[in-house]
Length: 132
Image 1 (cartoon, rainbow, N blue to C red):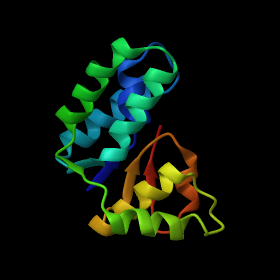
Image 2: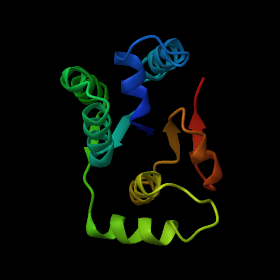
Image 3: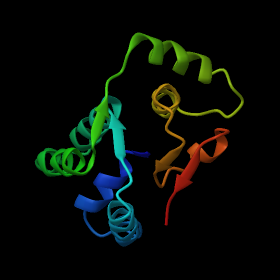
């Protein structure tokens, strides 16, 4: 099972970027391997927030549709995830609040791999990151 971070669909649907082709190639390999792809509700919120903040609301529908098309499941955020994220934030790994919430949800579902260009995940023990 591989967790898809918000930057993956954003690079795939966005304009030219150094990570765009890497994201496409890696995603194609993952899909070909038939690995189960998952994400969480916070990833959707991150994309909504980012595109709204940079005044690119026209990109929202395409990016969310892409993520929903490739993800086998979108995990909900539960009370215990928020509580666990709060615990994670006290760890010296110094993750962002959003990444702490992703890690909490990944822990709950037993996901050990994240597809992301966010190197901050490398600081959390037990998580391996797929990137270009």
